[in-house]
Image (tube, rainbow, N blue to C red; front, side, top):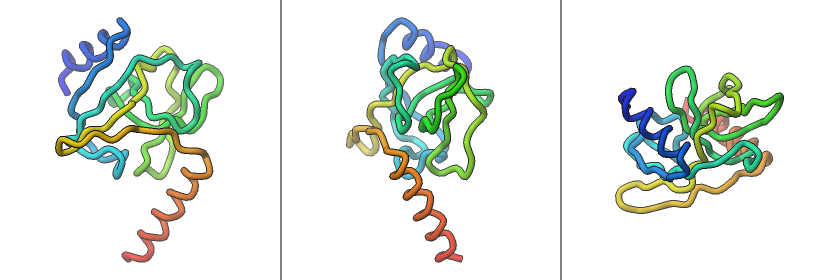
Amino acid sequence: MSDLTNKTIAALLADGIGVCFKVKGDSMHPLICADDYLVVEPASAEHLVNGDVVLARADRGLTAHRVVAMEHGCIITRGDNASCADAPVPHAQLLGRVTRVERNGEAQRVGRYSRAMLVMRRMLRRAWIRFES
């Protein structure tokens, strides 16, 4: 996305207005895939829990990843398709919470995963990778 698009998304969310935009990348596959549309609602860190999918400003730009921990005024996220966590993001960099993913005209609500569910998903993904090799 362009810098202007990123700034517009951030400004709208800061003003309390939800946004919908097309994403690139597969770091949240299979929940979010390249060319899906994300619906993001404004959110603050005190209302988040582990398992929420959030949109935040990261070094690489706007990033939608799942919250895996919150500590020392920062949110730690990781893509569902990633093997390690992202660098901590200060609460001030949080823009909103992803509430829906739209793909091929179909909307899917984005819920919260429990820690156990996240661990199970990682284990299944690793087992599948070994199986395919």
